[in-house]
Image 1 (cartoon, rainbow, N blue to C red):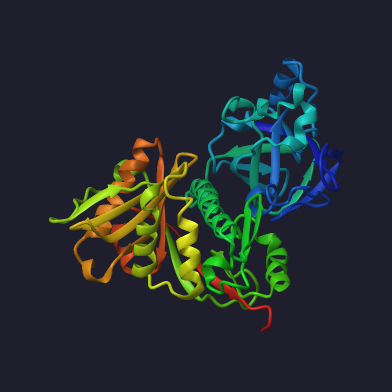
Image 2: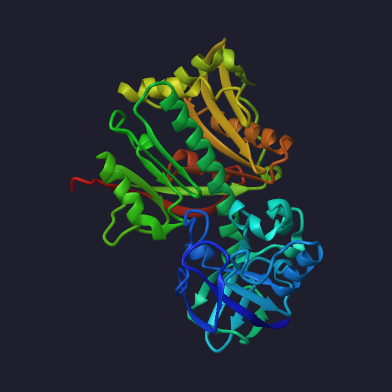
Length: 415
């Protein structure tokens, strides 16, 4: 398939983006272009937004006032049905530039003016898959000009585009689960300060110094916003931790190494509950019992202990949450949780009390949560663990695929 660049579009922020004859495209996007909502657009995985003139014309035929650049695409193309191409497809544009399709661009309220009644869902890939905008990652930097030839190339053999798309879905679910816990802790009266802004989630607590309450999620998607992240911890005077798959600033030293796993729920191995034990999902009336087992099994003490106990109460039984307990003679010996959203199941908060370790309980809880995720319509189940630890070994043994290696990077504003 071949096509051409119909129009190159940039703006100082917002829409419409206006046509220019030529522009340089780098790792973080098109030179001279800015994003008004930089936590949901931009960054290396969403460097360039593309939309075909064919899609624009179909939307116009439905009576919408859309036109090239009005929905924020940087490149309006001609001759290529972009949204029908698989993630990882490469676009060789002009003499130098090479982009890799990284995923669909979700519509937002900012582009509502291009649609009758503000209904920007007309270009959602979920409802109109042929007419969605697409994001591109820059593989080779270069200049793009109106009229440039576009060659469509298959994904490179070593392309990680599909894996990045899965990670983006998983990241959004992890972010939602953590934000729910942070806000529940704040609602319980603890000094927990939460920022929930697009793909960037940050929490700081002068009262609770542990990494669980002084953390950033989303750096992988928007690493270009690292200054905003560091200023957040400077403002609140706490030592923060950034979850990242590469050093977030020159010289950053990892505190601990993490591994991310994922697989389809039906591929998770079966594992039975050890003899003499029972496993069941608990309800809100037993939230305190579940939370107490969690903090004791995880050796959480001090003010953090009270924060964890308080934050669990509103989450047990809440929409999307499933909390499991393993019992021996009515006494809880292990607990775990599952959070489901966007057809992704995230395994969370697992602990086995010391007296019950080594019996295979953790693998049984992995299997049960994967089964619940499948019942809830999830297409992926994911989990995180400390690199080289028992949990990582159990996940690998149960059929989970290693998705990525990450690390926790501490940032001390006083250092």
